[in-house]
Length: 250
Image (cartoon, rainbow, N blue to C red; front, side):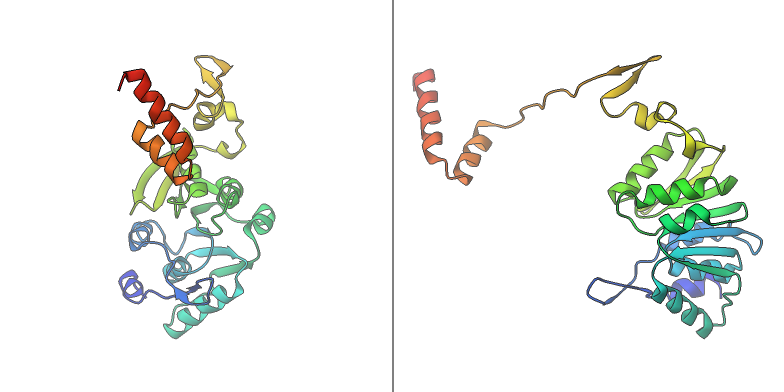
């Protein structure tokens, strides 16, 4: 199966909370990018399972997929079987990634796709346990960066010298190239994004506690009056208006 054939017949693997079929696969542009990197000799891994799993199966990579959803395994195998795509090089690991990844043995990986659970801190856990398995020069793909946990991971990696930000696709998916080992083990002082955030910040060669600035009052007299009305505080509003008139001589 070619990439064009797969994209023309995108499978619907996932289900909504109400049990309705839903296409939650990665954007076509991501598979088009990976199509130039994935080869039958590549070693690949993803958290999650679906369209991308079928893509890696069709490319013939030595692929590992980690998800607790057995039904997704079965749907992928059914889709591939009906279209003559071999899954012999795909190894399914059933279970939550935070339990599977810490003890999962892999060859040096060429591509890692983080697209499993998106609630905090799942994307960070997936990255922590796969960053060291990815070879230098390999690609780390973080999907759904429109969600806060994935976006924070993207922001941290974007400022790490151990990673090169390659591209963003459809304002949804970020691609990074690994330049150096060890970023997952660094303390906060060696993480630029963390060192400049929060109340303890790096200032020159020192670290200082900088309490947050007080919030700036951007309200207007009209917005404050409307807030009183919404809260049913007509009496308070009347007193303020009367006081304003006395102060201005109105």
